[in-house]
Image (tube, rainbow, N blue to C red):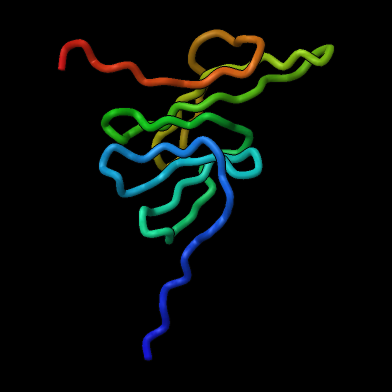
Amino acid sequence: MPLAKKRWTSSGDSPDWSPDAKQLVYVHKGSIWTVNADGTGARRLISNGHSPAWSRDGQMIAFMRAEKCSRNLCPERAYLAFANGTDPHPVGPAYLGERQVVWLPDPFE
């Protein structure tokens, strides 16, 4: 009898399907992860992030990350990274309070 592939199971927050529906990006214990649609291949992409969202073409993931806290105030900034988790870099200003990234439709499509 062949052995079944081990499937990933865990709790997570802020899930978002990739545009091709082959992967799910989500938050688990303060890090951003991806997992294949069949539950295999869970992989931590980015530490210290929340509210991930796939770009429309599936090439990038936008997310929020808290900056250094001062006097119990923790500004957050939007970040972009490639879908494989490389090159996370901040975009835009920092904001106080928790925010969420949303990709807007392309008005030229």
